[in-house]
Length: 75
Image (cartoon, rainbow, N blue to C red; front, side, top):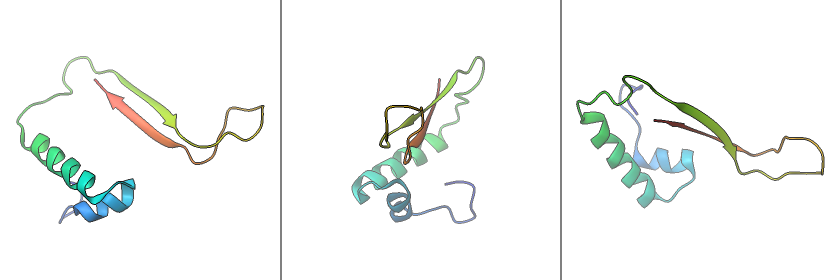
């Protein structure tokens, strides 16, 4: 949202995330609100983790599945 000169619209967020417009608009509003806070939430000790969610597993062997989404969290 902040990396482009004009930002992005809630409609573009809807298309990129595959959610409804109402959900994208609310997410957009919350992100903007959090960006205006003068808080440095990632100071001190920060824990980061990632995982893959979704996709269909084809076959009994192997770890991979196509169509997965990367999800990352920081505390």
